Image (cartoon, rainbow, N blue to C red):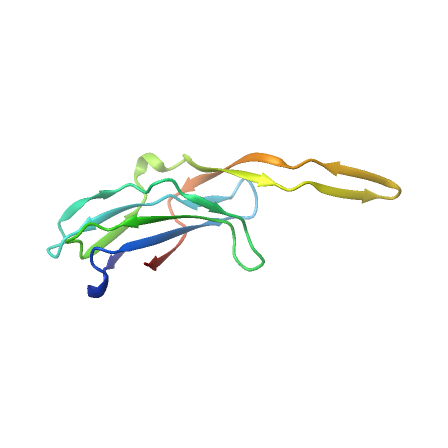
Length: 134
């Protein structure tokens, strides 16, 4: 995907969000992008590898997502968001703190302990992406 950077936003910051897609472990994936900045003549200025991405759990309306903030280089007038071939099949991972839960079945009470869990979502070639100009 290619985007023109609005003139008032050149050299600014951009929050990129990539959304979890799928309903089961077999079909879940997430778009794992990199950004290539282009100048006015659409020549590459350089690839912007995204810093560590922060995980946000699924909410009532939205699926889970990873997000990060990047600084766009000065002189960039366009950005191209893409997944490099070497990223396909890798995963984005995050450490998630689960809360303890209690399950009552009849007169029996079961406690499922919480704690840290590593969540990994496989990188795919496509997905849902959103930007927020800062």
